[in-house]
Length: 232
Image (cartoon, rainbow, N blue to C red):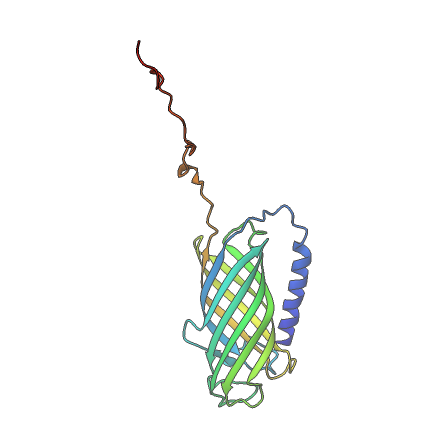
């Protein structure tokens, strides 16, 4: 997991450096919101160098991960993620078994998408970085019950339609207090996302009156004789 975090950080730096001068890209919003629900897979063996070992992954019934993503500007967005998992006593947790209980996580990420660079096609890869908070309620004495994390990750949206897609992602979470130790863990997500487009502003000219009605009072002129004069 240490190597994966370094790779993610390198990707984020290179991506930002590459994408800064892209003035030819329109700044019009590609979407307004993205919401999603995922099946969560967690590797909480902080000492392991391989975060993709199937036998170490704690899984949870779908949906165990909820995301909401708000588009900001020029491929950048803000993401909030809520995750829940239960430990499987038969799988490794920080090098030990018989660890039971649960973990709740809340993460806040900055997200950069390559969707515009790829001409808004089916493939939508992205990078994330941010901070998180993890709350463990289990009998694992190696990791802290409450830990803040630095998060680095990458993901891929595959848009089946313009609004619905599949999402794959991996996020390395590095403990800020016990750096690269037992509070580190990694999460993978597989789920469904829904993209809510930016609504076009409609022309309301049809509802507006084409004629202006003056509210000033006008004196009515009579074509007859003036009052006060008698017929001779």
